Amino acid sequence: MRRNRYLALLFGCAALMAGVVGCGGDDGGGGGGAAPTSESGSTEGAKVIDPAAMENAKGSVTYCQGKDTSGNAHYMIDEFNKKFSSQGLTAKLVEFPASADEQRNQFIQRQQAKSGDCDVFSADVIWTAEFASQKWLYDLTPYMEQRKSEFIPAPIETVTYDGKIWGSPESSDSAFIYYRTDRVDGVPATWQALYESAKKDGGIVFQGAPYEGLTCDWLELAFAAGGTVISEDGTKATINSPENVQATQLMMDVIADGGAPKAVTTYMEPESLAAFQTGNYTYMRNWPYAYALNQQAPKTKGKFAVEPFPSWEGGGKAGILGGHNSVISVYSKNPGGALALVDFIGSPAIQKAYAAQFSLAPVRAAIYDDPAVRKAMPFADELRQAITQAKARPVSPVYPQISQAIYRNVNAALAGQMSAEEAMQQAQSDIEKALATF
Image (cartoon, rainbow, N blue to C red):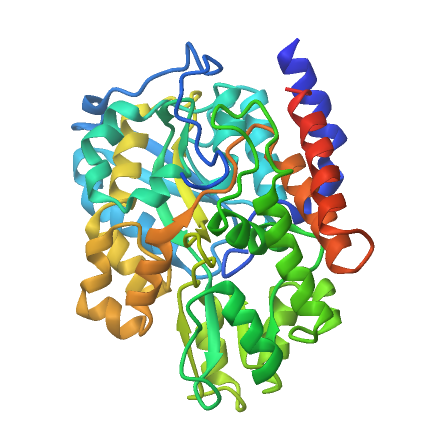
């Protein structure tokens, strides 16, 4: 019965998925019940990987991901084959369409057909609970327990569900505050002070359109304020809270008081970047991909810097993690070879190449200190700090509906169509309905 409800939910919500996966960017804990660690039993009976299976593995494995726009996947596969072909193990790359929801659908279709076409899949960080709850992924806990000290803890949070670790971090991402160095000395210490400065010193732009980007922008404030979205065990909605009302109200006020343009309620990442590059705004919230593009724009080149997010006044700091994880299909005919590939992707050599050659945020802390990486990423220290303080989005099999409840209601509040209290009340109702379907 649970699977039938899942299938109905999946196909009934297909139309809204295009804007739900990923927060944008170059991909395309104290954080709201972000990664339930208690054993709920929803994944009981899932296949568990044997770490020893990758030793002297042979045969072929297929690595599936979206369009390789930067070339990093082709590079990784070539390097893997150079290293392992002599022992009889090779890998090939299969690229899916560029859009994130199409990648997700391609994986779902294969898993429903019990196909072994994809041994390893590059999964968006928000897909963990959905895929694991269907028992489509190998439980990699025995492998990751031996390795997790090598990774930044925050990305591991994105691949943890039901007390188990379902993959290995592959690349990460977390946004910054960009600021004009010719106008201000830096980013104020709190969100409240930042928005007050925006009202006086030239404004701020961010992602306020009704899509996943707004979910990320709002969660960055809400989590810092101490708000949550779902309970720790993932079964109850907790979004209607004073902390979340305050976070929503602060975003509403910066628009109402002229610190952000009213048009920000229609902005995604490209529109925010274009507005900042006009030179009309002092601050921008955006992903690391915008750094190089700002250096190419005449009105921002050499006139900006980045910092991780400020604190909530009287609260903490929080960013939202983007990125991808390497997961292994339970229908793989070569799980040992698949694990060898996952291990290779997370290795220091590949993580360094991903950063230095392809501008992907490493998931290993030590890589940020490598001279080649620091040269390629002048903002390496800020990026490491941003990822370290970042949190996963709510981990739930119905995350798409949770995100929709956030961005639709917050956008309506930002546009002046409802109060902050009304937005959180409606989001609470919407999330409760979503949780009841699974």
